[in-house]
Image (cartoon, rainbow, N blue to C red; front, side):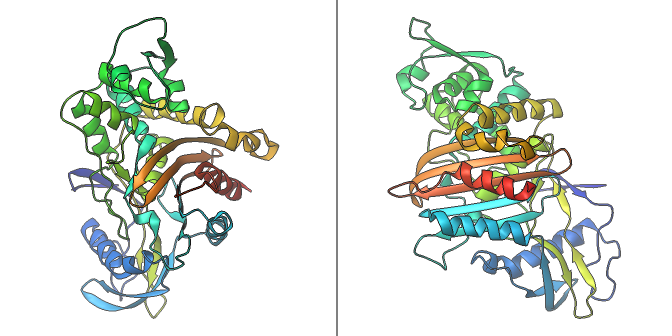
Length: 401
């Protein structure tokens, strides 16, 4: 196991052996520096095509100071990719994207994207202009559980509506006959904005939320083998109404890409370890020798294993009793999927780029042997055609068939 500092975070190459980046000597051990250099060069060679929803069979790549045309093999699972593409064609959201990764290794298993009426539109999975919405509650809940040691059964007192966030209500700590109480676990599952605002004012600081946003890779470059826009978390420097908006995901200034959304879900099922996705499985030279092999790369742990277990429990409640219960009800009750453990987080907010109502689902599934994570997003201008949670649920079904 090799550890090195990269972009102010500790990066782990989770591999038994790294592979040579030379044309002459395939599968020989090489340094982490050469691995990352090759990964960067591969990204430069294929990213423009990935942005166009294409997976080029070959690319002109510089490896070990030698430029040549190499054959590129991808981690994409053909059956899962067909399912993702088929669902977007069938339901025709104005904008839609689905990405599934192996949560333990980071291998991208499916990545599909569409914009209605624009068959050659860009790959939305790489775009970080979507409001993070209530997906950001994963960051806030983690900060509360992992740093402030708030128990998921902790009762939060709040006034006002569930989903709108009014300044007069969220800033008030008065207890009266209209005050309601809800556990952190249920507030997460049902995505109660005012409760998350109160949780933040009572237990967290701007510095702590900013720190956990950084741990979850907001405002950081994600070192994949293809180019992804940076997700943004603008955390105000003082406690107040703006901080409650950020913590609850009740703004459109904090943004997230679908690939990053899948990483967040993967970190929860992966006991707090966030894996970096990759799409290139291997690169071959003209003699069919493997000259590059994709490897798992982990960031420093986002939280402790105990904290990850608590957040996982909250995400399970989203599927069982929370905002996704209707979508997952049939799958949960189906005998052949009884052993599948699933969790997720929904998010809804009106975005500006693209304009429309953004609908998120990020989540995970495991049968005890394999772990997968998915992010699905739709943006609807006038009317809904499909929930993102339904797209994710159908991807889980396909994987575990």
